[in-house]
Length: 387
Figure 1 (cartoon, helix red, strand yellow):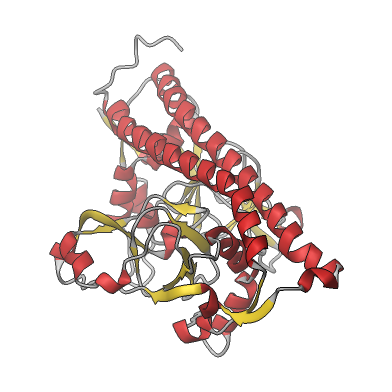
Figure 2 (tube, rainbow, N blue to C red; figure 1 turned 90 degrees about the vertical axis):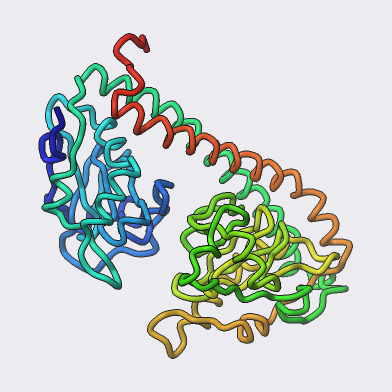
């Protein structure tokens, strides 16, 4: 027998004073990450007196564009926007089990199919609460949650390690190319004024193959869009992939590994590295570096230019939009070749480790998402498992 979602949880509509909220505990659709990747720190908080509240153990889901699969299991209390749905488990329902019910791709497919609106579809709250859930005992709920949580804990550990590695490499970049250059003019010897096009073999503005030709899409090459770039040093997983037909329809858009992608339309200023040969859509400009210019230097350089990219893209437009020509002409300083080579040799092991961990994260995510529906359906029986 199946129950509805309303049988195991409630919508929460409590509020909290905005004075009790800061950028570290405010959740909006912007800092909920796609593809069940958790959260980031909010860029700002709204200028209101009260906002919706959530507690530890609540499940937060973005109600805008459900197909982005934005969900988070709350590990602290705080406030959130009205476009974030807050679910709280009822008595005799493990809150982590509720999270995995909602993290199942079947739920997001259902929420997308029943959503309302075209440009910015929102989940229908009444329909959402009618979503069918299995009748599973509390003991089995805990076992299912323990199995899946073990995988998520390992994913989170890898994410923390990668964040630490990136931060260490960032410190080295700042020491070599920011602090020294500020404090000692002698270190400017060999530096030269340039623009972004001067460090690139080419700058590629992506393009979307015709969506009217389904044969252009398949499994042969990653097709990168902005949601794939969130919270990722390397892009190892994409929502869509191209077939050989799609690839060959725009061969001049192929990007080699370690090219550097920058989002320039909509959410401008995100920076990621290409993990394997890929193509992107038109919202992304990508630098294919010159042979003697470190991809890792370009990565941090572009991150340091993120605000400038956002501001240039925002001028005179309601939606940030920085075209390829404007992007190519952004002024920079290029350090001496010896400094670039030294930096590359120091940080390359950091980035190699980040990429390895990122692939582990993708493997563990696939394993979790494969196990989840089989555990929920009872195909995998947990009743005799001792944890």
